[in-house]
Each structure stands twice: as structure tokens, then as C-alpha cells.
Image (cartoon, rainbow, N blue to C red):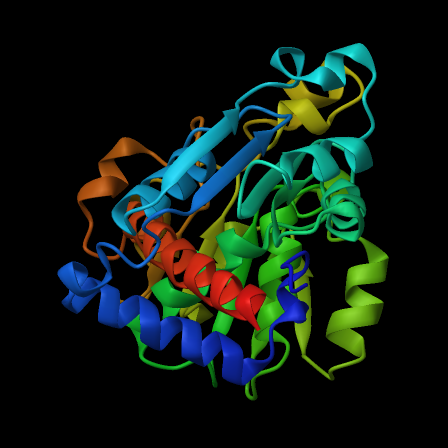
Length: 306
């Protein structure tokens, strides 16, 4: 049974195939409107979500399928102490595919080992968020037309930002990639990501606390919010939450073809004035996420038949 837990579960050619399918869905939506007729997606969200959960639901409905599930752990048997493994076995009796978000790293992997249907990791703690990465990759493809020879700046919470970790993993397989890590010292990219991904793949990277200094060299700026839910104490969060706020002044020295991305939700780290700038891509990312989740659901259900 094929599941998607980590973006590296997909080969480069499989990502290209998913992008091709997503682009075809964009061009020919009617062709796909009944592809999942009679199929059910179970959305098991043990942690709050707006975009990811509704994106999965919209994806399944637009493929002609149905959705069951829950949006918070206290409305599931997890509140009674049921294990992730037992939940996965149970849901396998009701649905054809599962999308799971969980605050504990590795929980979707555990579920995939017990489920008899495909499991998609919809975010596990500060670890991975592969379908957000698929949305990011489709956005880069549509904005830049390539994955090679790009300088990408990651700004904000690089320590707990699972979307950052997943995208760095994905981009590490392409040539000519340069990475600029922009964060306060307390929220730097974990050393294991630098060692296991950047160093191992010989990807040049620099670390800086200054967004303004980094801006002129960037092809892509990937902003993130400082996540209150990942902090152990409120004082640290309050001290760091406004570390980087992107406004029009900070874009003065940016390239004209810069692509500004953000996995959302934002709090105040991107000024609303930036929304009208043609370089802002974050709401396009939201839409691209739906198309890539449609392509992924199709792929995993097709492989489940084999």
C-alpha cells in the first residue's frame, strides 16, 4: 500500500507527473469531475487547520468523491485514549484514503503501517508537510518555469517550520540551488537539516539575521510565521514573533521577478500592502495546493488498485 509521509517518498519523475496532472486539471476540470465517484476521503485532523483540511475536502469533492472525518481530536476517540494505530485500522473500514494531521511527529507514519488504505501526511508536528511542498513546487513551476538554478530565501521560523524542512528536502534534488537562511538565532534551521540535506547534497547556503541584506539576490522569498503553538513558553514567543515583517519598504531592493511565497496562515509577517504586488504568490499557492492534492489523491487511489 502506497502512502505519502515524506516528500522524498516521491521521486523527481513522480513529482513531475503530479505537476503535469495538476496542470491538466487546471486546463480541463470537467475531465476529472467524476474520477473519484463512489470513493471516500477520511480527513483525520488532530490539530487545527483551515487551508489544508478544506483543500483536501475541496479536492475530493471536485473529483466527484465524498468526505468523512473530524477536525479536532476531542471530537474523536483519541479523546478516550484510542491509539493512532487503532484509529487507522478503524477508518480503513469506512474510507478509501486518509489525510491525517497530528501534533506528534511520526503519527501519520504509524497510521500508514496499520491502515489498509493509503495515508497522506497532512502535517506532523514540526516534522513534515509534504502536500504543502507539492503546492509550493507547483507554484514555483508556474511562476519560474524551472526548479534548477534558483536562489531561495527562507525567512522566519526555520526551527519548527515543517513546510521549510519539506521544501528544502524537495529542492535539494535539483541543480544550481542556493539557500539563504534568514532567522533570529533562536529559530535557526536545525543542524540535522543542514547536515543531512544541505551539506550532504553540496547545496551552498548562508545564514543571516538581516532580511534586507539577503533580499537583492533572491529569486524566491519563502516567508513563515513564528508559530505560537510550537513554543514551550509565552515569553520566548512574544519576544520573537515580530522578528521579520515584510512590507513594501523591504522590497525596495528586491528583484522585479521575485516570487514571494508563504504557506499561510500569516499573522503580521507580511503587510497586507504586499498582497497587491504582482510578486506576491501566497494566495496562488493556496489554489495550487488544491490542484496538487487532487493529482495526489488520483495517483494513490490508482496505485491502491494494483
